[in-house]
Image 1 (cartoon, rainbow, N blue to C red):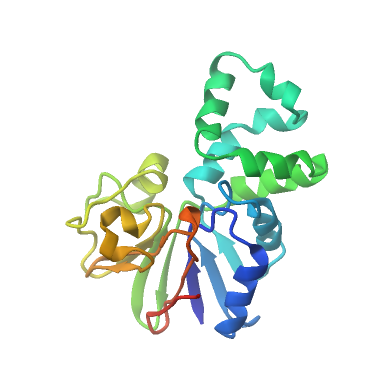
Image 2 (image 1 turned 180 degrees about the vertical axis):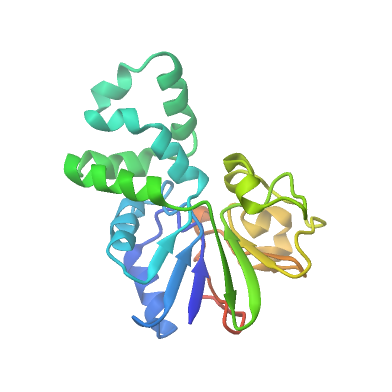
Length: 232
């Protein structure tokens, strides 16, 4: 079985592992996480370390992981003092990440050995921007934020990183007629209160960010039968 989730944003790793147990996730199943496991909540780095140890899970890069990577200059000597001494473009890059709730991630990295940070950065640098796959005869594109500057004639490899990790489609947006695009990034409640805590399913795309970064629980989508799993 193929499961997808998104935007855990430091959600409790133990609770999330419990959700996987509830759906009987096993070593024969596979999990895709559509980016943004870090920031906002305290367990982002723990989730990354857990993902790195799984043979049957893959992270698709999100904008929050990309912001961390752009601040890789911090990690030679990560400390409050080194951050306080930033200037110029490095300060601007750090402030962009900081303003997007990087605090819990940085706190976790303060307590992480430099050798471990190196492996985390390598893992993130190797994370793909999208995944195209077929499950039970149905084609899917898995991506963090949707397909910005969309064109049916454009190859996935031709999209800019920004279009794949920062875009926010509107409800009238249509993607491929014969491929279901699954993404997160935009909490579904942003489209209206009636969508709070539930996926939005259109005939060409599905948004599965139901607001873990806003204090709600994440969901799981099983691609084999399109079943949605929600947790109390």
